[in-house]
Length: 292
Image 1 (cartoon, rainbow, N blue to C red):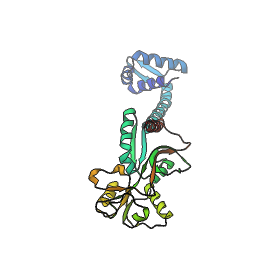
Image 2 (cartoon, helix red, strand yellow; image 1 turned 90 degrees about the vertical axis):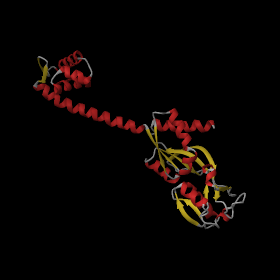
Image 3 (cartoon, one colour; image 1 turned 120 degrees about the vertical axis):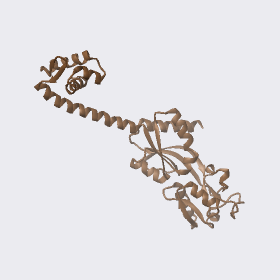
């Protein structure tokens, strides 16, 4: 017994006519007739009354039709469920911190889409710390994060590149003419830092604690435009990768003597199932940055 035979039989019963069923199923009438006849021979019972051009189920056919429709409905539901699952798999949910999103991700996104137009990337702006937690919990498939050398035990990582974070001030700031500054010097002036969940803030707070320095933090924000605005207007200084600065920002980046290096990596759940689409993204990143 084949699903196609059951589908032909069901369609014929509901249409009341084999020709109509053939039109609905886009198959020839002789094919349906032969298929139902083979089904009747296999079951050893007559399933259809045939009169002129009309058909109707026999008593045995009525009983078979009830079971047949239930099975076909379950098969169709199963097919739709996994079709939806396949559509979801073709979408990769990727966490991106704001600064990395403006520096690195646009080119990754553009090149990956050219190579894999069938895969959709759903970028989610999120801090690196929060991004790693979202990957662990399954809310995100992958995250591009800034990090130190250590990684949570439940994650695997592919290091892509690294950037140096600099102390940034507006024109006219007392430290604007310096070639380099110490963290001790920066702590003397109001500053704006990224909100919680961002590795930049975690790194800075750790360095200040090590030096037993209490910085003058005026404000926290996760919006790069807000941070730039505060710095440009000399409301506060801040720490930014110089790669995100434009000439029109009128912001002066100054190297930090102690060094504030950020490693950029792609992270995903360790020892967990990865869709082929997520694997394609990781492989693409590996090849792209190895080539560079």
